[in-house]
Image 1 (cartoon, rainbow, N blue to C red):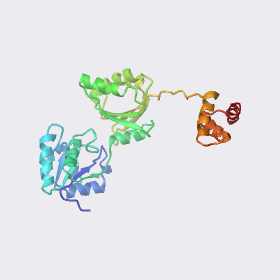
Image 2 (image 1 turned 120 degrees about the vertical axis):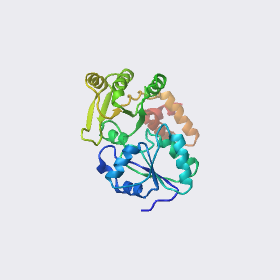
Image 3 (image 1 turned 60 degrees about the vertical axis):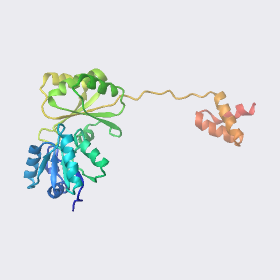
Image 4 (image 1 turned 90 degrees about the vertical axis):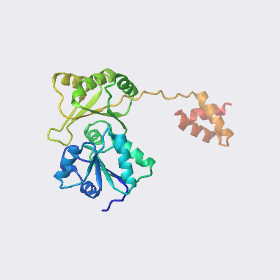
Length: 281
């Protein structure tokens, strides 16, 4: 493979097990002119493990604007950059989102080299519905932002996925129990792909009580069942309603029999009853 000059490559890195690092991802890092890394110390260990030597430039939350400008300038001059986070896919709860948006504004090519991601991995093993879900990332510790975030998902019917650090887990579980109730199902996915990987499927009441008594350890993904969709009452049609609908179809050229047949399918009423009512008019 050969990298395109002046392009940004978004490279997924292992979330625990180094064997998950794909050959294509390794080759991309080996060919890039430089690597933008969330924590250069973490990335240097990864590079050393795979025998890769490349210049590193730090790119994280507190320098993303200044260093982002540097990266953009280097890309515009024709260099190739590989963007990595400490673990998983860059831009997912990660400042890489800002850099990619800046590249899009400047019409700089951006390519992705897929890799492990905790949100999808946790969802897959949660045992909860996966057809529709929302990724909520980390809850803020700012009281106002946290309250607004929680209120925005109070009636969410899709499965929800949250990230959480161990020192904030107890507070988050307590808030979620208050918001959703103790019976709401949750899958606590801890230390994905690592030695102590654990998936615990339980309810919020049990989970919150457990961690009040036990010290949280490791990195957590919380997968929470959505609320039950509100039941909508099916619209009920009277025979009079059905007759009016049938008459409208007759005005469009249908015979009484065909109009009664179509209206019966729509209303769930018997075709014969509708037809007899039309015949009495």
